[in-house]
Image (tube, rainbow, N blue to C red):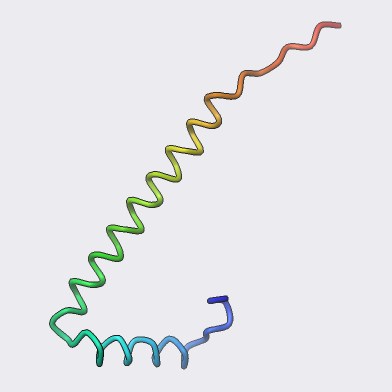
Length: 62
């Protein structure tokens, strides 16, 4: 979905965000989005590592 946005679309989104939120709220909004993404990545990593630790290698007897 976001792969086809391109530079003009990105500029348009930024201009609309600037109009809606104003220049004083934009840095706050960026920080909030960044911290949310960081927490999401951390949680995803934790879930993946938990899944990998739950898997026990099965020894095949020949």
